[in-house]
Length: 122
Image (cartoon, rainbow, N blue to C red):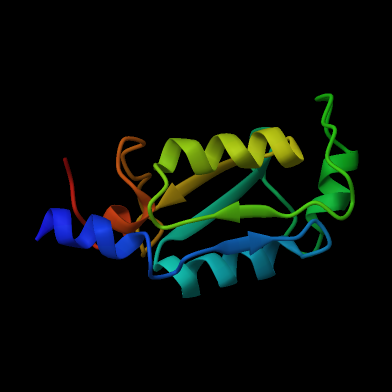
């Protein structure tokens, strides 16, 4: 079943896009709706203000981020959790953690997002 699910991940939830003009709360809600996992977005060591847009948070980062206002981040269910988290850092200078559906613990970075959504473990 694992192999079949991994193949299925390449086709279902094919692409989740994150635009810089979206609010943090919208990105988190859309991520949960698409993948069934909780997305926690941090600015520094604390959770980001849910009312701010990613572009506004990007401007407050101390990192040298070269994202343009129009660039979108694309995430697929077949991506490893660690890959998706690194993309958020690269594109927006933000730390994110992908958590279980209840948001109680971080999922294993070696899993794909699809595996994490199904509650699989390696």
